[in-house]
Length: 486
Image 1 (cartoon, rainbow, N blue to C red):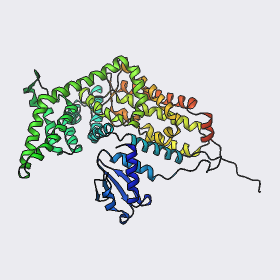
Image 2: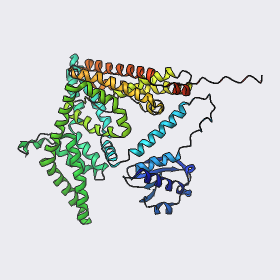
Image 3: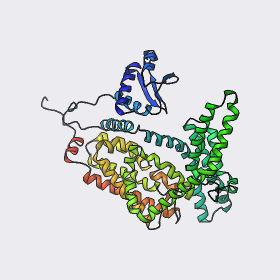
């Protein structure tokens, strides 16, 4: 649905649910707009259901309007924009009143809402669904990654060999079965029976596949990895729907699961595992080649453009790539480079703090948001400070590019550093680092990248982040009280 249609639908819905004053909260799931309402008696349900874009309504803990997967995100973003209070008129606060942190936060929220509208395209919605499959796996990836790092440290020190042996299965058990979890989540996300998606995907990790020959080669357990599991589970969802439409209801409970598992499992064995295995291998080779031959350029581009990719919704395409690299190589070498984008934001924020020495409101926001930024949680700084200011966001990306280049060059020289899990960033990534020369060497490379990102982001922002006009607007000294009447 186009942006204009999304706006029209949101404008049509708003008065029928009692207007802006009646709406306490706005959210959405895959198909439904979910509204927290102060008074449900103000809702005109019949008129809502008569709207062409509305597929139905559901009254639950929230009032839910069914719009479908193609429209719900865009309409929700447009409705949020309609609910925002109008900003203060130019000059209303007086000539000496500098914009406050609240002004920046409001501007940042509007930018975020507009980004949500732009990101409500079929491709980006599909990427968001892929992210919904992998994001629930992140806690297990983090836990297993830290256990693996602990085992490696103990092994390097020669301590507690029996414990090191026991930690192997603890850290690797989940990764050996990750295809099953991906299959389960894929079927759940795309409307199939989750356990059938997991059952079909489990074929990929079953040890007995070594006896099966496809395309002239014997299969190996895990061949195809998460890419194969994703494809197998998607196929299972379509097989389940197709079978359910054709089979009488009395036979559905027997026939549908059987056909889904049988045909999906055979397709996985004699097609998907081999094809997905080739794709997974290519991803691993590409990442290795990229750092070995173009580390400087790769780090510069990835570190500098990651946050713009996030704003465009394209970063979600990287999640299966990270997971494939972790499953295949034990760590993803891309994440430490991408994490440099947050370092640039931190350095930029410190420069903003020093440059706007008269703006107590923005400086207070930076003080409160910096600890989260150091731990890799960048949204408060991005949407509350750097992005609404404009030019500082660009200089922060320069810092991210510099940090990424540092890590990339180190990888090109043989000191690669990877992360054994996805999710954390900033200082929180240190326990998850891995590299060919041990944890300390990897931490030194990653720490050097962070320091480079901090410094470059700071210097670029301090010297090039503000025009004279911007400084005059945001750093105006507080007006002296008028004492002429005394």
